[in-house]
Length: 489
Ligand SMILES: *Cc1c(COP(=O)(O)O)cnc(C)c1O
Picture (cartoon, rainbow, N blue to C red):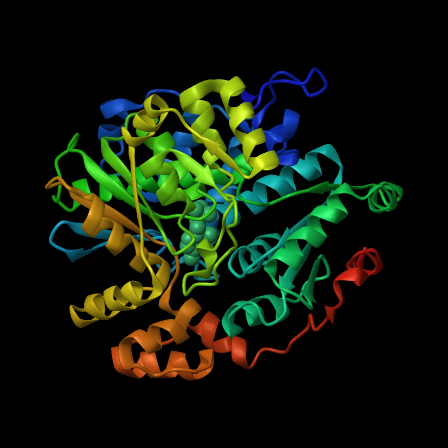
């Protein structure tokens, strides 16, 4: 599979690159992204062949069909990481929650959020490409809470890769912070920033553009790369579970092969939804992909009105913080797929220069042919958490946004797959509040309260965090980040 660019070619970047090249340098001409030049049509034959496959068998065949330039033994090694999930025979359980609504649980990996689905195997891929080339890479990550722990976990002790992870001190949950500051490996550095997530993110962008910093890295023979969700090395692993979830419904005799379903995705940077879109393009029987958002509802407005408008907008802090985002990077890949590179470049430059773009009515209708969207506020979300709990299902606030979107957008009597992106343990104060009305409660007490109320035990990797030694204590002013990183290197 070859990769081409969403904003066209600038004459400096190569016209088309391989999968491993797209992993190492994910940014294309004019600030665009890499997308597959073509996607194979899998169709019903592929689905029928994998009716009874394990997750790994399905994944292996899909990656082979996509013809990526990664040795089969490395692919096997990467996929073997799904064996560390709660149930190695089925890393992604799909459970019935309402009559027509099934939840695909993407959080059974080591850090209890769906970032593990892609970052776990991605770590092996990146490290093996770096080893093969005899190069050293530095991964810089700014996190609001879920990407950081997942990136540290996957790169821990991996050769040829070092990770520096910046997080806003006080801006993550206790569990998320402990998952980072208790990570102990010589190739990892975690830095708390006095500031918010935007400060961490802009510090990172400044570094990526800083010539002295890049010179210092070059002197140490280290190249920079990124593990953020625009990296196609992550997207590719997010196609698999959409197909798996569909096949799970077939296996459970909930649908017959070929029957259409709704995919209902809690969305931020649109990586998860994009994986579903690619699965649909390759032939998965999908009626609509429902995009669920929180109060930061740019995606709802884009899909329902054709306008992406950030003028006067600020990120709102919500109870589903992993979706607190205004610039949803992977939408660009959808625009490219529908409207081509010239139009994508024009639209995205509008967003960068004027903070908005407007699709034509015709373009909006095309988008609405496959996507529908709604958003859910915090109070509604808590209502859905309580309601689901009363009927026996415990879910997190990100997953809850999908229930609102389901009520609004799943208009036909078809089955819906809701994607659950985090375990209850990662956002326990909000859930404790939804279940008991308790406010101002810290993670440790919220975890105990939910555990007692729901008669469910706290998983060991979360419980253990509170007694694990803190090895990554540094919290610094944002002006000192560069020095701190160079000291570590
Ligand atoms: C990252 C994340 C999301 C958003 O996923 P995107 O692929 O960025 O749309 C939703 N929920 C949780 C818990 C996450 O960590």
